Image (cartoon, rainbow, N blue to C red; front, side, top):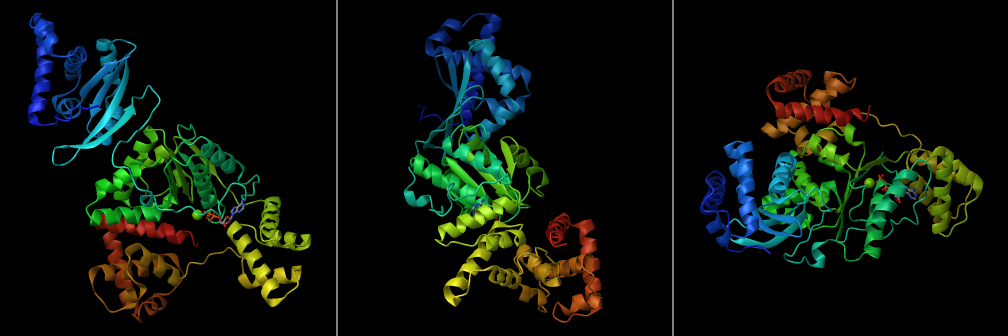
Length: 499
Ligand code: ADP
Ligand code: MG
């Protein structure tokens, strides 16, 4: 499939430049042609001619960087197959030089020529890794085939929960589109025009359920496909681990080998730039190969904050659907379905009472029902409206209000900086601990009505002048340090959700 003895050394580069020069020379002088035709296949000569044209159209550096390493592997049935050294390389060419490349190839090889690429990845040692990825050009159907190290089953961790199926997902107006779209992609996972499918909506409305249902359905219908469901948090921590263990390329190779990538809660990657970069490359590789990518988020792509614009525009390339809180009829249907699954008959007045009082979140609806049924089973209570009222009142489920307290701020800052709350309250002056503490005090002053004294008291009995100093320090940082400025913005956004 590829020439194992070839690597991109300087010698090769010169050879290619020479080829181009010879071809150029031939065109101008009309001699030496026969000799070259004898020693080289026709498609290589033509490719040299292409290089000459391309060289005339772009500057020297990009020419050397992006075109010299391309190698014509074969020309068969009107298709020119070029070897490229990496996925990234291919994407760059496609994004920046595809028109030039295609026009030149049309001119030299003929108007009907199709372009095809094979990625041949080199190891750092300069020996070729046994890996070829075939990727068709933009003008054809896309396919990706790996003939490298077959992954063993346990490298695809079983993260699917069989509880989440399409059959037990209750459909109503609020989730109709999301439900149809997820079923459509699971019926035809590869080369689906809805890819990437982006599902967004508030917490507890069934995003994970549908995402996992796709995975379960594909596993059942097409067991050969490699399905991976994972949270964005897991993607992030795995990526960090791979950096720590110096295994980033293995990490990337693993993801690129997947047929159906189901990635939950992408908003978690906000501000994690390096992880986003890598997700971007994986996304492109899978997308170009016609693999299925389904993403969930708590908000629409345009509303995502601190996510790279390149990713946001990729997310908009396919189909975006939202899930809204279920309307009354759907809430009733969900309660009835869940009760039936538990083998319980539930009086209609109790069903309506629950549906009227738990409105925003299916998870809470489920939780309420389970609590009620537990009381019936263990406390031998009557299944009636009174019991439902008691449970809903006790769980305070209908009150969705979130309140921004200093404790919430401390928790958000603690999560953001990975600094324990105890450390923020301690006397430590270590820079990262002091910064987290100052940031929490700053947000406390900016976003709550608390006095400096009360804020100070929440951080190990510090006095109001310490709080004032912290606020000034963060104010200064905002002008001088872009990292702290960004931290402050991200944390303010998180706090705003409680306002
Ligand atoms: P999200 O990922 O949007 O936060 P989940 O998918 O985790 O929400 O859903 C929360 C719970 O509600 C899960 O147990 C899920 O099975 C259930 N659920 C959500 N929507 C429905 C629905 N339409 N029909 C049946 N169960 C649902
Ligand atoms: Mg979820």
